[in-house]
Length: 309
Image: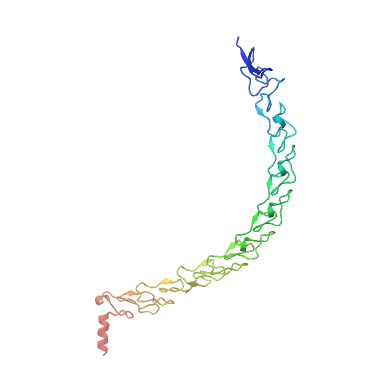
């Protein structure tokens, strides 16, 4: 016949003893006060040692249980020590509770510490609330700290507001920082604005190379200025026309900025005052040179001059 064992504490010296009992297990589980049955359940008559509960005495009593003890089967205890609540006194009062105490049944506490709100004082007031104080029932606060707005003072004023301040009801700014516009100064002036833009419209005077009421459009690449149709009205040296095209590379000097016409370098000619291209002299010309206005070879031009004498 197999022999099984169980353990229990003696009444006299609380030392652990092992007894052989038919049908019992080897060793009792958890924190049984005195022995267990063959199903490893602690002896109902003696229950668990202090601080433990449930059928096998494995669960720990709540930290808030008075004396560290609780009911054997369900772990309940009452009343809770200060700072704890719940049927098992295992839940801590919110850190927002004044003096860290709360109702032992539901955790509620009033009033709250500064900076907290809610039935359990477990919600923090917005960082924008003046002196970190808000209504304990809904978290509302007024007025707000400088730089915040809204019913909960949880909205930051726009970074475009002058001095970072705004109306705490609507977030409106009386004045904007440089290069910002809009009711809340939340919009940036376009990069093409020469100076500040209008707070109400965003319109501004344009830098060179930009056009439009708000200077948000680019002129053609080489335009210094252009009109509302993007037609260039001023070009840098060596550029010409409505789109500031480059002068012909064979121009002797800068070309005319309206027509592109120029006096050509040696070896090239341009017979038309409106022509913007320099054309290579005829290959039949000696040394490849010709008159820059008539295309007549230099030698021929000299011969014709002699005949006219």
